[in-house]
Image 1 (cartoon, each protein chain N blue to C red):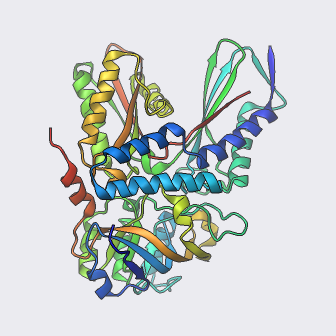
Image 2: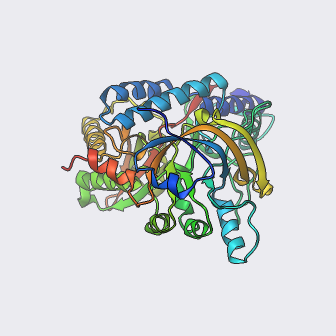
Image 3: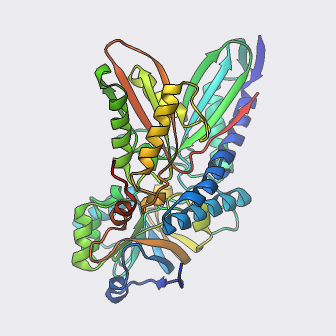
Length: 186
Length: 280
């Protein structure tokens, strides 16, 4: 691979537009974890007009529920979970300023449309490479929904978290592109 | 009659939970390395390299390979001449899971009720399968199962006339629809025959076979090879970003079945199809 592209949060439209499906990049700075249960709550809170636990503007949500931290470590193993389960909630979050999602696996047409309309990007982290990714986390702090345990929202400070641009702001999908390139039709 | 203390079972299960989650079986690691030589996609090779590095870090640091340390599936093979003393075997196994997941800093991913969904906080209860065999051996396999891959598994009651072609089509369609979601390169367990639940059980048990296992039945060995070749032509590739390594293995287990039926179950294992075994 060529020179490392390092992205710092918060994410501006300009930065996001420069990303192309299939690029490998590294994220540094602050990101937030959130998965199934947290998304359900955030969605209901937006609908009810309540204040969010953090300002979405230009931010990233990492679909991850980490393992408990060992003594002296900020976090346990922390890889991505399947993003498709968040599809029902994501368009509304994107509409409210969320710019970046990090997960694994394909997304719905509605999510792709929301990324195009609001200039967002969906990154994939490598599913299962969770011990390696824990090394990229410098600090972790639960900021909301503590009672959800691993599903609570955590504020993470990460250093060069490796991700791949899965769906860029033009709607190009690297899962589809990559699969077509190597598919051998019978 | 041989006596086994329930506490010894709990202790063994505790150790196996931690080992299974942190140490990737050698056969899978070796397959990663050989796939690195054959994978055609540069990004695919990069991802395989990352998975090898991840497994090394996990083992060295005694950290879980994947944060989804699964629902704990336990296979008990017990001789009929064994007598468990000092407690109920099911409680002992769950105590082992509770202690293993707490002491090993493993993630607790189990909810007590599928509708109400509140986390039990200790990853119990485990899913326990028992097989009673002749003799007095006691053997346990702990196989934590992540749900990224479990969610993409499937079962179909085919008609006998669907035959081998029908089986191939169902397996192929299930893997194709799963795409990059179940964390490829995957391991494919297939259960054919029996009743509905027996086919499902066999497909899970097939995931415990080594990835380089060759079926003793020629027809099935041939079917496994054909399926593996065709799955790897789907183009899904490592992590789903395209490539020639979509599955590491296809393993099939079969059972006698009814004159009217052909049940087929496909259980997908991710690249971290973890399991550890021990004896008492």
